[in-house]
Image (tube, rainbow, N blue to C red; front, side, top):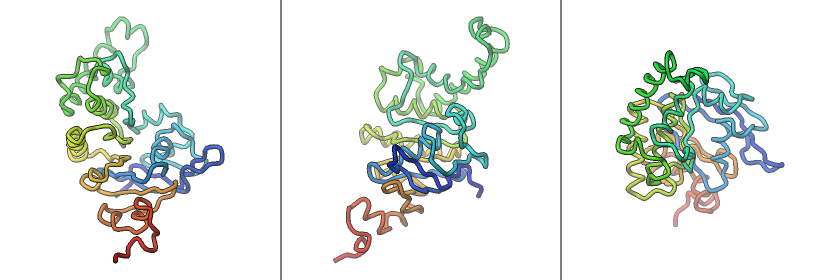
Length: 262
């Protein structure tokens, strides 16, 4: 199967400190891949490199075969890399509907005069894009929140709105940075349900940074494990869970003895 996203020998440095070192992997169509590892392993740095926030010292990221090296962050988003952030990063003072419409701004187009006058081709595009947003609102079951300011919503709903806004961009791949952090167990279960819906109903490939290992084992097709910026495993949840190097990274025991029991 052809890879949608290719990460090839990425190296990220900050003032001489190596955050990610020679990491390569692929994300294929329809895959839900969890990027895991201890704190400081380089997981968010990797997402930032893919989405253009960080510029790798070396290596390359390719989306559907096209290099993203040197491409501006907003152009990477337009190319098809959707991103939901750990802290939602929503626009305060705007409703759920308005935040999701931001995800359709590229399709709206138009000049300032047509936007202000709200007529002609811009009006038609506004109606078309609002219909797309309403479908996403329905998909994520956000109907009762659609006209509410996002800052007044429960934290779990804000996280969901952040993902919904990314989906509104019609991405080729979706990057999720710890979407379950700060959620209750019930909120995590609700969130997991929508992740599975995105996976099964939309077939959208997802790269998902996560610390909740129960969610990871239940949902992910494949796990990629980073430790101190180095990839130490890439495989099925079952295979990765049994890997001595992974157990050593999480449990703090020597890889030589990680597979040995009394």
